[in-house]
Image (cartoon, rainbow, N blue to C red):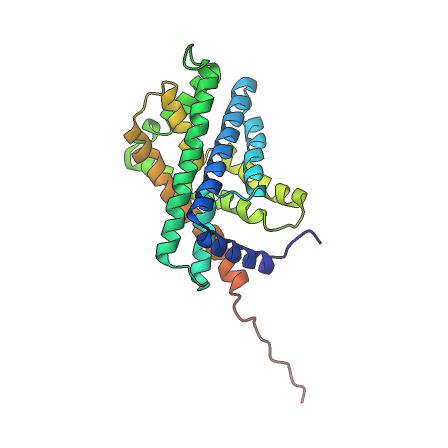
Length: 275
């Protein structure tokens, strides 16, 4: 059968977390670099579709193409390792310590950011003919996204920060469900279907994904968005990273681990004795 039952894909999640911690620095950086670059290109595609068709739903339906591609090729997103690696630590896998877990998260963050920044530069060149002409309609839309998701939150103060954090939580609840979806099937079609649904949901709902934002905000600044680097870091990236960590680990990793990898004893019923 193509479908993998929960107790089995729970083991796969732990195995995946363990393998990611044990990867070399080189391989971790290559895989995270490519993940960031591909996801950023998918975001550019989705915004282009949404802008040119006037249908954000169509952009959301098509965005998961990039997510499916990068996971089928074995690349790594920060949002995924936030969920998987701690499970290997909880399972006491050899070599998995707090230090090695933080090392993995740090390397994946750097790789994702470098990949997303590369795509941001390439797309900025495309949208401005090498910075020689006015910003295209799609480029202008990207700039407005950056403004709305930084100074737009700042305008609401603490309530804006709370909203940003919660959107980060909700985002990685869905994205990590997509990561697990890749383990729910042994067929390519099954993996794609299971990944597609939650990723489409997060993108259309406007939740905050730290790696997508590594593309949207640098390219927004390149294209004239009216926000600063500190706006981006304080009023988006840092709270989003924290929200992504809480959402993926709490609502996906720990829940699946707690009920499928470490199942509690079942209820016992005493047989009735007739006298």
